[in-house]
Image (cartoon, rainbow, N blue to C red):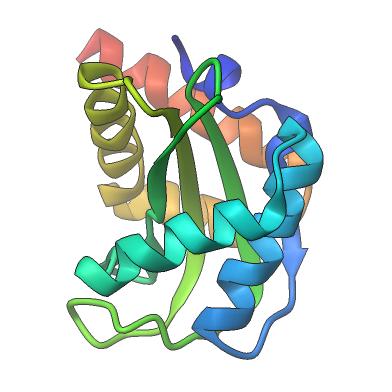
Length: 155
């Protein structure tokens, strides 16, 4: 599954405004729930439980909240760009403004790990992060991610 299949335009939120980590998890749960027809409170509960195990804030202003969901048919991703960074208890202590959320089926196994690795590889690149922070247009954000993935496959 390539990045365009994993995310898609309908799963990009380019200008979300939140004041806290909890509010961020609530808002992205609502957004995801409407997009994949899944109860938002279930999404929030699973994401929140995962955060209690350890932060998914990986540094450089990036978080990759994720979880496995009973009844979900395939892995889906969401990209959220915050207007203002928020504290996310990241490993480097820096606030977060770029979020790549993943929802995987309960039995996803390796597919879930591959999607997490893909998101991490994408957002590790400082140039990509800069481009993602520089646009609030869904088409442009997706184009940056697609181009980066193509470049990584060639390398």
